[in-house]
Length: 164
Ligand SMILES: *[C@@H]1O[C@H](CO)[C@@H](O)[C@H](O)[C@H]1NC(C)=O
Ligand SMILES: [Ca+2]
Image (cartoon, rainbow, N blue to C red; front, side, top):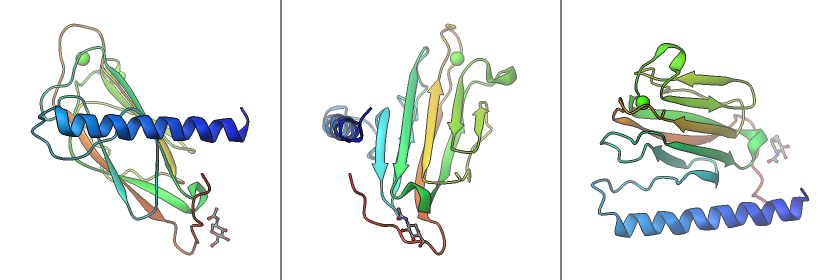
């Protein structure tokens, strides 16, 4: 894809994301006042944080649910992302074959479940992709998670303003 088309697509996704966020914030009557990211692609800047959580949190998440969050911090090469998760509880299973969270950065890929809290996980640069997946078996869900993701500048680097 051409860079121009890609940035238009990115802006569109970010635009739709923030629109839905506002709709949720005003209409859902949720007990939580925390603004959380919708599934999709999100851009952020150094020294800020975003929050993701499972649907219905702190009540149990749904069966057969998938959500992927792709997060970019500008500039990607001069930043890292660190997860801070006050709460993490997924259905536990061998090899996380049931419900799982997949955490991917440009260096590695981790699959976690149960109470294997990813708190403190730090990426190699300012990009990560988180995929939450609950299985279709009509049985176990759990409370799920809420995680904050902080973007920090790498020491000794300069973060140029985002050109997007
Ligand atoms: C990253 O940091 C280096 C070193 O400070 C700087 O020269 C470079 O321009 C920065 N790159 C971006 C894209 O911000
Ligand atoms: Ca399950």
